[in-house]
Image (cartoon, rainbow, N blue to C red; front, side, top):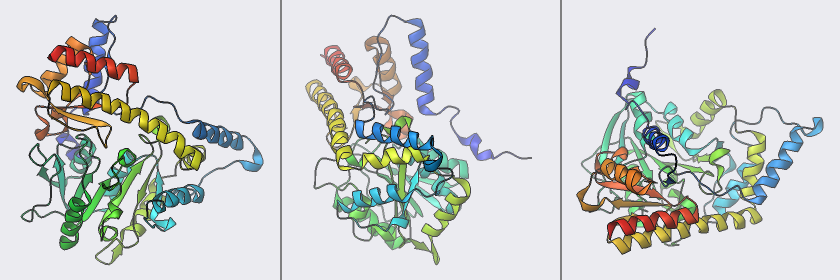
Length: 393
């Protein structure tokens, strides 16, 4: 028996596990301190009433013989797939129902999609980056090439014709930087992928936070994208499903490589390795797409957007360079006074009792930067920003 030695190439601890251990140790030593957590991107508002009602009703169905549901379709119940289909159509994006796959979250599918792609592919990943993109490819032993995201390009790198890649990861609005690609910029990526017969894996988990109508919320707003891109999305941040888990992946019928349709391969993979999202959760998710559900969700999204506005105001008051916050729930800030990102993490935790995420944890280009999230409580967010501005004045 041999292990997968690629796992030995991974960092010993996942970024957020390291942060959790540090915070737990500080809290144990200082139980009287109130720590404000603005690190991990977990929501704080409860599920909206329409979702809770649908979940309760679905749970009751499961308790009656005549309405009990056992195994469901691995790719999702038609009622939820239709809801997702209508959601895209409301933004003038036409999808066939069989192109939509319901999952237990974007994180799972971003990693699992690699099952249908050869380990011989070269992967192009931005730096800094959401760690899952890197780690899942390291686990498979793929060659990784990094694109340089930095302050000069607004942390939105564009294609380099000198770089050859087979799989391209893009995330917009970006995690961790909060930066958002324009349609013109994404068109360059689509053209690049089409010219090289490459595949774009597009993470749209934060699309609902885009308020500027000129900015794209889906890769499929771009000409040619259905021939070169898979899109992943999630209800975790948009509808508060971090604790209930539901997302969806779009694999267009037009995606074909070497005469093989990726939609067919992904369906085969899912029907073999995945038993589907629970019926109760899918009913709740469908309610999130209803007219009343969307209204209630927009109210929650506005709450987080107002938190972000408080945070961007603090950045401007202190004169710190930052990106994000306007069409994204993340603030990506340059650490003050030339501090390193872990150095600034320790200062915030020990001096201000505020937790954020060191940019260095997202890659080499994150050194000297820091991520804060707008998913916290309003009062806590305001207090944390007051502590920061007072300290830096």
